Length: 341
Image 1 (cartoon, helix red, strand yellow):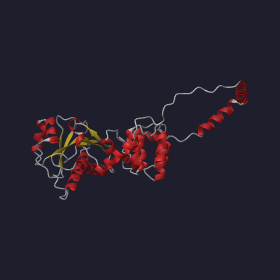
Image 2 (cartoon, rainbow, N blue to C red; image 1 turned 90 degrees about the vertical axis):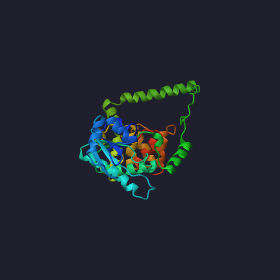
Image 3 (cartoon, helix red, strand yellow; image 1 turned 180 degrees about the vertical axis):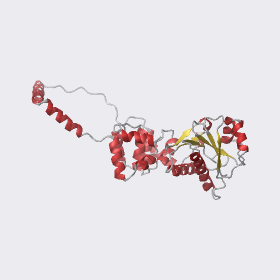
Image 4 (cartoon, one colour; image 1 turned 90 degrees about the horizontal axis):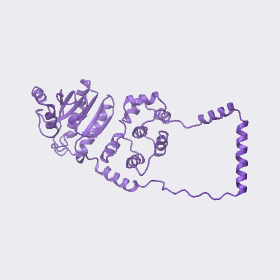
């Protein structure tokens, strides 16, 4: 873990392995395939000559040559024929076979393009769903960092109904104005001489009481006050994990958070996570909006209608959608920072 969608050029990804959306010959072509072969150099072509091609849904691995990765995993995606010719199963197999090869070669990080969504015609919104489901299912039992690299964001599409619903919700709730309008401070009303005298008498009495209280008593009183403070973010997180009957691994994987980061929080109860990380745990725990706001507050954050990221998060929580990857797909589509990581 985790799984992230990023915008960029897959040939520049500094990971252990990148995946090539190849044709069955494995000898190069257009789009991502041509770009990878061009960046890798002639050595990649020569090694691919020895592989004897590749079947649709399968994958084969080579060295990375001039690329900033150790390996290139070549997989052949299906050509879209309307969706009733086994395209989904073949595309799922592309991702799973590639991930299996990455694990077999002890890769800790791998980057995918959106396989088959280019000249092979697979609808982009469906291709994203297949990619996400296959990667997420694999990561349930394996520790890898996986990237889905989108070269042209204009080609990136989420479910149309979800996109329209989000647009409507953002239009209704997003505002560039602060939630609490600024009001200039007003002058205090004049105080009468009698009120001033009463005020001096009151604070004089308080001061004398404080003087008569021993430093030990004051220390005990302070300690009692400190003990009444609310639990911190980490305390609430671990309490909720226990209440939900989750294991640590189930929680951080649902949150799309790296195991090392979770261990850091577990070992340091005063750890302050970033806002996307705090929200990722809220999503993993499936907290309702009031509890989500409380947990965010403990981390020092809040949700605001003047922040589009916050409005999108509020939409999903309010609608009971707690799939961090679905939320990340939407956040990516709206150019927002992703959860977890």
